[in-house]
Amino acid sequence: MQVTAQPQLPPNLTQLANLSAALAQDESLSGFTADNQDVSRVTAKAANISEAKLNKSSLAEADLERMGFADTTLIRCDMTATNCADASWRRVVLNNVRGSGIKLQTTSLQDVVFENCKLDLANFRFSKLKRVAFKDCVLDEADFYSAELSNVSFRNCSLNKTTFSAVKCKVVDLRGSDITGILGLEGLAGTTIDSIQLVSISHRLASTLKIHVTDE
Image (cartoon, rainbow, N blue to C red; front, side):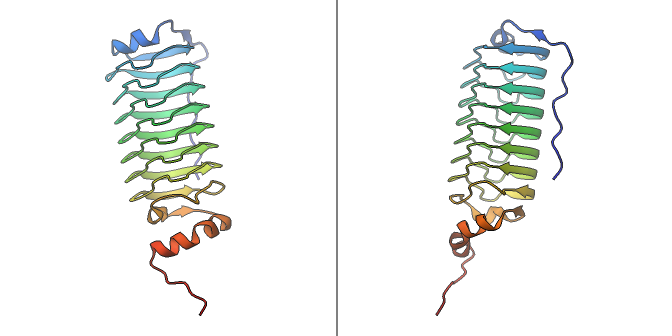
C-alpha cells in the first residue's frame, strides 16, 4: 500500500489572531498557526486553508462546504457536525480530532491521515479517498455508501454498523480492525482482511451470498 504524503509546511508560521473573522470573509489563508480558536458555526464557502496548523480549536457545526484544505494539520480540534461536503483535502493530518457527525460526502480526500479520531456517524457518501489512512479511530455508524476507496487502510479501528454498501475498493486494508458489525458486506470486495476477521463475519457473509451451510 502506498504511503500517504505528509503535509509540507514552511519553517516559520504566523500566529493568526482571529481565524473565525478571516474565514467569515471567505479569505484564502496560508502559512499560519491557530491555537485555541473558536470557529464554530462560521460559514465559509469560498475560502481555502493551506500550509497551516490548527491546535485545540473548535470548528464544530461550521459550514465549510467546498472549502479546500492543503498541507494542514489539525490537532485536538473539535469538528463535530462540521460540514465539509464537496470539499478537497490534500496532504492533511488529523490527530485526536473529535469529528462525530462530520459531513464529508462528495469530498475528495488525497494523502489524508486520521489518527485517534472520533468519527462516529461521519458521512463519506460518494466521496473519493486516495491514499488515506485511518489509525485507531472510532468509525461506528459512519457511512461510506458509494464511496471510492483507493489505497486506504483502517488500522485498529472500530467499524460497528459502518456502511460499506456499493463501495468501490481498490487496495483497501481492514486488518486489525473490528468489522464484526459492518454493514454492506458486498462492498468489501477487493479489501484485505485477516483470518480472525473472516471467522467473525462468516455467517453474515454466507447469508449475504446466499450460501447454504449445513453439516447434514
